[in-house]
Length: 241
Length: 298
Image (spheres, rainbow over the protein chains, first blue to last red):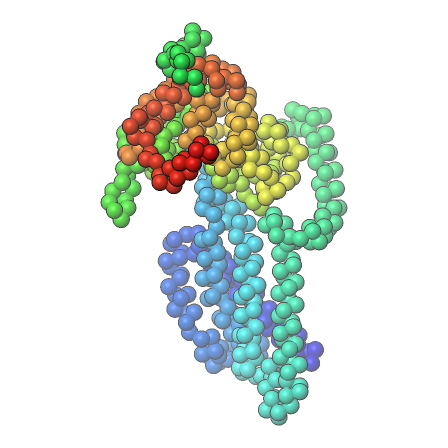
């Protein structure tokens, strides 16, 4: 059973990872630049309405039996929603931050890298949490196509023999996995984004503890650099340049 | 205000002030605005926000722009900063036309607009970093500017941990770190409480005295305008036109005690007349009359 569980997790994470790799950059591009929004969003909207399972036969034919078509199905089910959700989150970024960056001399590329991406990260992270929940739905369908596999295969087979006492624990296992993962990710939000002011004292304390050695090293380095700078002012500066 | 008090005209300048203004006029022009106009397309038709606005700001001058709400002060400063394009006229900074936002013109917004994911120090480092300076030299510069606005203790704090006044001081330091030629401030203290606002005005004058910077300050607060500025540009509403460019006869350095002195009061009264002409006072609302009808309340 542990084997099946691991296989299911592998499919969902690979599919979600690919969706993130393609969906997030596309979503940000669509959110920032009108050009990309007009180029991609109509297509994305079109594909979004095709139910992902309709691609299943095609995927198996192209990618053959194995994990590949299953990962692809999770990917297709997630990526189109992701582009739209990420582009919407990007548009919600406070435009006055962009204006402030412009008056400080930021060029378009710098604005995307230094303002848009860090600015939307906390909301993006929460979007991904919700989308990961959706990915679990696609997992169940993905495991039924081609060669059945993972937890769903077990549910299917046992269900056919009416061994419901074996089916329910698996369903509950999926629920518990999703719930625990979401709670963990929600808690990590406070650690990743201390500035979003939502982090509790516990996560803030952990951040302080974990970053302590790095802060000590940074402080020592800073003092050394300052000392070196003041000692040999002119020659050192020229050498640095 | 004592009605018996004989107020001097706001144009009466003491010899020192007059000498100051003649020196000011000889200084080079930093910002020149020529025939600026701005029209907005709305569902109800074309609205003229600004019409033929012309003025020039000299080096190291602190000019306030004041006017009733809806007179296009914010539009004006957004055009000056390059965030909006004018429908007519042009803006010159040191003789160069303004085509878009740039680091030679700093801006402080009413809504702070600090980057919440950066600490105070990193916020101030943002401009120099965008200009391609190394992290080390940008950090050194940022420290000096943070020291200037008196926030050295908070350099590692995040914006959400600061009060409104402190946020706005960081925003000023961040704008100054780019060493702009002109600093535009769009009602920067409008969201602060009265006491903090007074403090911030004194802070701003201190900074202005110590830093080589020309400031254009947008406000709707009369006292603030008279207290801060060398000259006040008074705008009319609908459409936004220059009504008058008032030279403030209050000598520098300014202090809060001057608020009750004759030149201050005279200037204030004059601009108040422009902004709220007699005979156009708002009608009393019935709700107000009800409250007044009770003799004990009055």
